[in-house]
Length: 606
Image 1 (cartoon, helix red, strand yellow):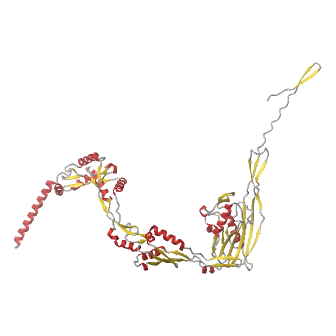
Image 2 (cartoon, one colour):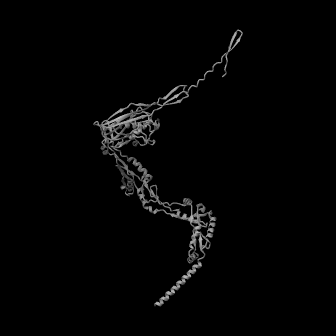
Image 3 (tube, rainbow, N blue to C red):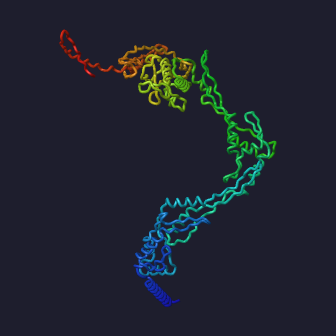
């Protein structure tokens, strides 16, 4: 093609393009329509609003909605149905936003707008309005529908009829597709139609089918085909098929395997463990008239149930009757304090001991015995502090403590744990006689005569404690012995032969006993009865000096004690009424008659 011919072709192509563009522009202008009206072919929620102004379209939609807001729609699933209205679920379409959306679809510059509206005219569009819904109400409705509709699937499983395994077929279920159902509910209630609507469901299929259990059924037959012989710690015993049947956990709830388990197995292994298990015993110390020596520890023994169940399962799956046997597994458990560890503590002899005597009601005696048991056997490491409260913990009814006489706020009352201070006082004096540093000690609020003067120690969990430090450089063992009327606390370890010298100041009165006086109408006037003589406030102190074996002074400590007064309780008779003064007699009247003188007294009426 020559150059002149090419120019002719290009010129003609340009003319055709220009004609097409002009034709499109004319066509776009022809269908552009008015910007104040919606394009033809537009529907909102199924209502034709084409050619209407946005305001008119909004008004028409809102008017129609007002008519249908409380009109229910029948929602169905199979033969079941539920009637629900938009107002019940708080469904509120935004009609103004929907109109504004379709207005923008048919908008733009005139030629472009014409093409858009031409597309809407021929193909149409139906817009769903943006919608609000009350989520709580929607969830409530879905829950209600699900409860009435849902039927969960049933997995295929095995059951026993006698000793024969039977396959129980599975079953498909039906459940509401909640996500799709929620969208369907809102969309239907936000529309301007009130025709019945089917809610979506889905089939809930089982994972395990009957054919999946063929192999397991064969295993169950094998398991119940003959007895099994087991051994445990040299003991042999036989489990027969009917017992084996109670120990099997058959496939169920989607499982496809055979196990040893379930309530029957738990009960059987639990009963077996009662005869097998015994806890380890720590090494301890025996104290005799010949001295002190270590009692060796004893290891424990416990049935390993998971491993034993696995042994049993392997045994029951053996087909040859002569080979159906297994050894159950038990584990040895070791003591926390072994014999070697106890020997390494070098607890060789008595360091100190102290005895106190007690009496009182049975509850108090019980509490003394109980708390003495709690502190008995405590081993105190070198350089550490022994805390009475840490050793005993809280004194609670759960631990067995009973209500007995106890000093509360300076008054003798009854309370939980009365009698504990008998033990704390005895422990204090054992540490005192051992020459150990005592870092926390509090005397009783009231003076108690049967305790050593100035050497009592009260405790109250958790704030008032008795503490002392093991400064001997060796381990100490605290032991207690409770008799019918006395308590002994002893400390054993490596004797250091310390010498303790005590100087006790006299018990002096610091204040007289206050008098509490009450009137007793049953007493004669002026009578006085003393129910309790009371006790004065007192104080004392004990100086303790501790010397080592060479005579060097280690500690020089004074323990001060102050005791409150106890009131004298007196009952008195009522006071006699005040004596009224006698009235003075009036002078007598004298009447003189012939030869006689007569005196007439004056009488006063009350």
